[in-house]
Amino acid sequence: MKNFARLSVLSVCVCAAACVSNEEAGAEAREHRSSALGAGASHANAQASSPRCGTRTPSDTELERIRQHLARRAEAAKKPGGGGGGGGGGGGVTGGTIDVYFHVINQGTGASNGDVSSQQITDQMNVLNAAFQPWGWSFNLVEVTRTTHGTWFNDCGASSVEAEMKNALRQGTADDLNLYSCNPGGGLLGWATFPNGYASNPKDDGVVLLYSSLPGGAAAPYNLGDTATHEVGHWMGLYHTFQGGCARTGDSVSDTPPERSAAFGCPSGRDSCKGAGADPIYNFMDYTDDACMDHFTAGQDARMDEMFGAYRYGK
Image 1 (tube, rainbow, N blue to C red):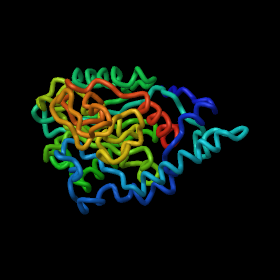
Image 2: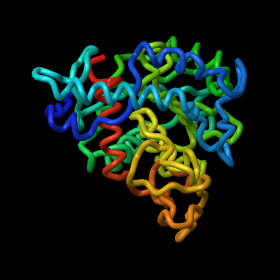
Image 3: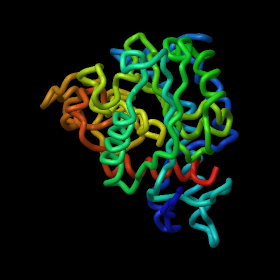
Image 4: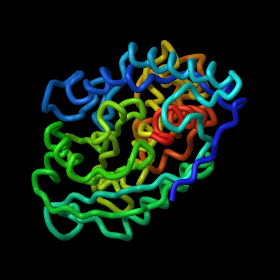
């Protein structure tokens, strides 16, 4: 059952700061599969020092369109009767319950074949709720599907295979989360789509996870369930904390200190951008071990609220 907390007009005015209209997002979203790697390529993120996360890095043009759209929503909210600048669903949200459809892709029975257990799925949902509930968001498991398909399982990192899988399985609307577990290969732990891409390609929307990254899986030190936390953060509208390096606040959040590159392991005291504060290695949107990650920030919460309100709520 969906239950979203609405932002007041004042809250919308205070929080809004960056997003792109459904029409403007289309061109960028259509490049999702071929932007840097070519058609049919895997999701490896060429800008990261390791392909842990395959979520694409948005271009400067897309970031600017996003900023302009959220600014327009903020202005619209200031007007009498304003609720967020148009589009189905109107104004923003400050949290709520997100319905989840969990799609288990396997190549046979048993954990080694990707047939993750019901207990692992329950544990994964608990990890997500523990990470997001402090900020007003919770996740409700609506349905689990299980599909035995060797190609989908082993080649889900290929664009054409991913599209076939998602076209067959995705359920719900823009504010429903579809999770897919499979074996993408290439060192990838997962990837996600951003909220602003939904309108141009609804079937593509969702999060793909390495099956062994679920709690109790074999992908140590990434087997406590925070790959899903990281990727759902993207699905909610967050970027990597190291996006843009030291030069700017590339993650569009003001309270995450910049860092020159992704952090791995748990390098306490790392400070790669001198004078900007210690790197946010404990943040869910870095690349550190699951046991190292433990929080989002208030700025990231505001960003999730405004991105969800602009692109997912009521769509």
